[in-house]
Image (cartoon, rainbow, N blue to C red):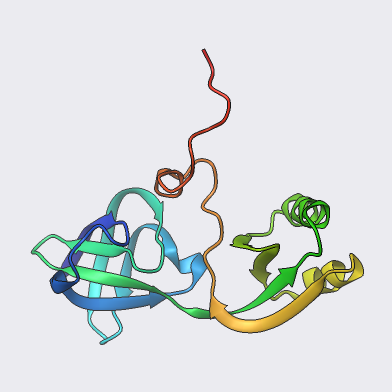
Length: 159
């Protein structure tokens, strides 16, 4: 069975090395070791030293050579639009307080899973909610080194 031993960040590997692709939802892209099936139906083993949050466009380096491209699956999500920065901060607090995964979309927008209870709460806060099927890439979290590689350096440094 083919074994994928490393995650290569999107844009860091040549597309000519692609030997397959795997389409996964956000919850299925945070893994360490699991048997997966690529988009053509062939099995492979993801065998990483640590759990990693894979992103759309990342590559899975195969032990025998080649790369399997990771594609974010379309999911039921909701884009939430805020009128101003204060509303965005308030909204982010309420979402975070419920430990809900969130994707920062820019321009006063957040993307969340389309959970009816969550959406009712958000609408009650007076924001615009638009449901759609789209890729979902929530923030990786403070302890995920793959997610930190794309984050700016901290503003405060400890001595």
